[in-house]
Amino acid sequence: MGSGPGAACSINLNTTLTPEQRALYQNTDTIRSLLRDARTIAIVGLSADTQKASYFVGSYLQYEGFTVIPVNPRPVEILGRRAYPDLLSIPEKIDIVDIFRPSSEVSGIVDQAIAIKAGAVWMQLRISDFAAAQRARAAGLSVVIDKCIKMEHGRFGGSLHWAGMNTEIISARKPRPAAR
Amino acid sequence: MDSTPKRSFGFETRMLHAGHIPDPVVGARAVPIYQTTSYVFNDADYAAQLFELKQYGNIYTRISNPTTAAFEERLASLENATGAVAVASGMAAQFVTIMTLLSPGDEIVASSHLYGGTITQFTHTLKKLSIKVHFVEPGNIDHWEQAITPHTRALYGETIGNPRGSILDLQALARLADSRRIPLIIDNTFATPYLCRPMDWGASIVTHSATKFIGGHGSSIGGAVLDSGKFDYSRFPTIADPSPSYHGLRFFDTFGHYGFLMKVRAETLRDTGGCISPMNSFLLLQGLETLSVRMDRHVAGALAVATFLSEHKAVASVAYAGLPGHPDHQLARKYLPKGPGAVFSFDIKPVGGDARLAGRKFIESLQIFSHLANVGDARSLVIHPGSTTHQQLTDEELRLCGVTPGMIRLSIGLETIEDLLWDLDQALHAAST
Image 1 (cartoon, rainbow over the protein chains, first blue to last red):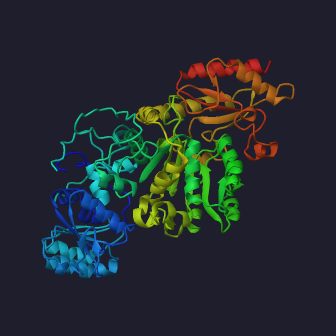
Image 2 (cartoon, chains in turn purple, blue):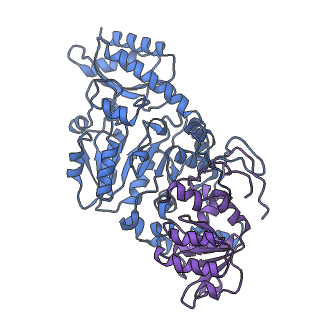
């Protein structure tokens, strides 16, 4: 996902963010480098219900080769791993904290993400807390708001296109085959 | 962090590029034709994930196909839609839309100025599914409002109504639909996204017969459903409620702004089977690549022909919204500033009191216009609705659609304009003697 297709075009559809907020929190280059470099993703609010959106995202990311760590207050096993009650309990390094909780709970989750020195905070579609996002940015974390991490992975990886979705990617460049 | 501003590419660039990036191995510049029924799975886990809709990928061409996906994404890009599902025809497009949104007992309020085949589908085929359609004169928003009941699940109309060329007040209809929390479905076949993009005015769903101007060559039948991604389906039962055919999956809850389209594809299209062939998707893509260039010529020709006819002594009236005398001329200027399409009708003057006879003689005298049941071809086409597209309708239904016995419908093609005017003139002369 280096400098191939998608480097030049703007991605605008299906967001509630203003153009200024999009420039900060939906930066295409940030999203592409996060998805390229991340190995371990903690999903806060990952449900054990296999028909929930969070489970769809978690199982997708796991199949695509990421280590997915469930964060759920209930002592359940999800996607073959024991859920941690919160981010602070996770012993390993987290590259992305993906948030599937209401906006009102984001602030506390972001504080924990900063405390464990996570690489990035990702708020799923229609989830936002801009004050918390600013704190995360100030602490050196990358922040994505109002985007689905599965859709973005599929957008730049090419598979979202197969679902007839408007990926908004315009390019005449022949991509180099993915290293992964 | 890179902060280089990203470019929003123009309509013509997207006509040629959206939906197809050269693949990393072959690098084919044209969209390849994936003429295959099915796709080998990576492994058992991947297959399971695909069937549960947890992965994006191809299983079977009845549901999705890479050539068709290029067509879908390109059309979605041009309509400013979040996505598209291509199907076998325009009739299939509106049918899968309604099958996905409505349940038995539900209702639609629709414009009465529609393609005759649509009126037949709505009146008779939907009746078998216990779905009722209320037809209203589209020009007055009060008529729409009064026809809405607690069972109404959608409003439906054509950007440019068939065959009288009436223009919908898209913004007013979108406001009404919003206030009742129901989607506005607009068939944009006659306008194409080059002349009008209904989603820019608030429509939630757009349908197309791609057979017409999108293809432009008259070689392939196809259709598409597009979603703006902006309608809130959270209280819309068919999209929000758990789906029994996917283990209780809630399409809107799980897929959000593409929940409706996922349901169209993974349930309705899967179960009703009206898929488009990859070859047709390829041919329709060839049409899309020249859409703007062709439409500019189509509307210029249509205006020239309409003006010529309006001044001809054998012609009683011309119904083209591009002419200042048309009742919807102001709406046309607002919603279709480049021109209100290239399909319109006129009434021939009766010969010996018989307009039907004059119409028949006119059609049989034409040398360049093709007499057939289609519109939107690169060639100019002509038909007499009263004896063809609208012949299943009763006289009363005919009147409600705004069709008269002497009405002739034209679809203006790309021939030399002087030749078209010559042909019409000599045929009008032959019909009046």
